[in-house]
Length: 497
Image 1 (cartoon, one colour):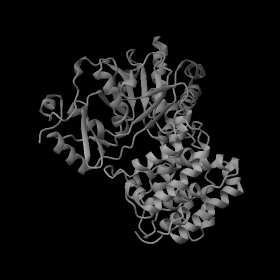
Image 2 (cartoon, one colour; image 1 turned 180 degrees about the vertical axis):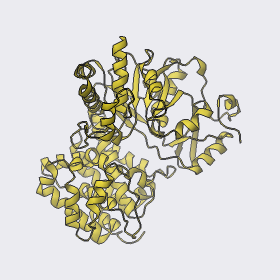
Image 3 (cartoon, rainbow, N blue to C red; image 1 turned 90 degrees about the vertical axis):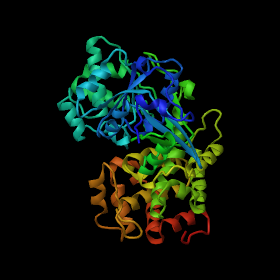
Image 4 (cartoon, one colour; image 1 turned 135 degrees about the horizontal axis):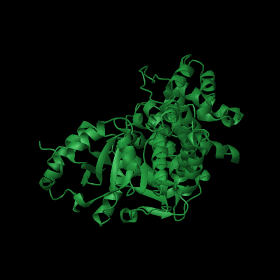
């Protein structure tokens, strides 16, 4: 089968959307760090709408900070790839042409830095996942002892981290008298723009206090909220998409129809007209961000750990299980009082829509995929909500069971005695805490609660929190995940599926 490329676009069926603008006239205005599936199904799709409307100065230079896999797949395709939007039995295909150049940072850091330093580049966006910010999730501070941060301090001209690339590119622009770009974080972190400013300016200040102060004062770091469910692409996805295209695409992406992007409108050097694709610009992202982190991401994580332990391979399977759907309803009742509703949003309706989205069987979003890097995700997805519940004196049994689900998961062995492939930047610490085993659930919980990078200092000292987690973990270990979920959900469906 012929491969998708600029030379084969004309072979696409009429039903497949594709670039109708002259790609050769598109110039780069955005550099994106973190060339993964989410960016290609979200920000790049919205930028595609801008290019189609004539905004040809907003092409994307995309860079992977680690693996060459995506570059190797897309370069022979001239940067083109397919987005498959799926719901039920329906599939809508669109070929995206917004990516105009591809880099792999470790292969040639200077090439990426030159691209970021070009005067035409006015925005640098990031989707590098929580762990790549090299910060302490419990405090939001730069982890100055992180090995890659130490490398970037020792060799600032050959950075490895996202923050290191930002610091060096901004240093070059400042030295050349070029206005700074706007830095747009698109990862699931609370107050993500403020956090990235703090990390970047601190890293810069450790090497040059003047540069650190300039970044803190002169560079815009708008906060954002992004939302679209994008599972990992499988070989079956590739086969199905190739059948629809009549061409081979080695790295398509699959996503749901829903897409949301809420952005703080602070772009001193200008920005694309992302409103054309449905983006919302606002003076205050925080209510949208908190709603999404706690209601969607928090529920996703709880569902991932508990669903995996109960034998559910995908989110759709778990969310369609009556026991788990009832559990989610109660979980959201615990979360909603901690979430100030954004203007015009009904949180009950938002929760109902989330459940429908979770149940979309066309997306095989694996529970194990969501479960990765839990030490980086728990603080903003579940623990912040628990802190607010504690402050208000409200019980939080479902949230506690979600945290206990993470603990049970990182023990590394499932309920059938099979090994769990735990992937986490704190894996050695988690393994050391798990080594004595689960026979004493209280002691097991206590060892994990001592991990300050996850739980901070306050939560482990709160007797109410410690007791709730210990009880939840004891129930998980003693009864199994599905029975523990059923008991909290108030259902009688505690038996086998």
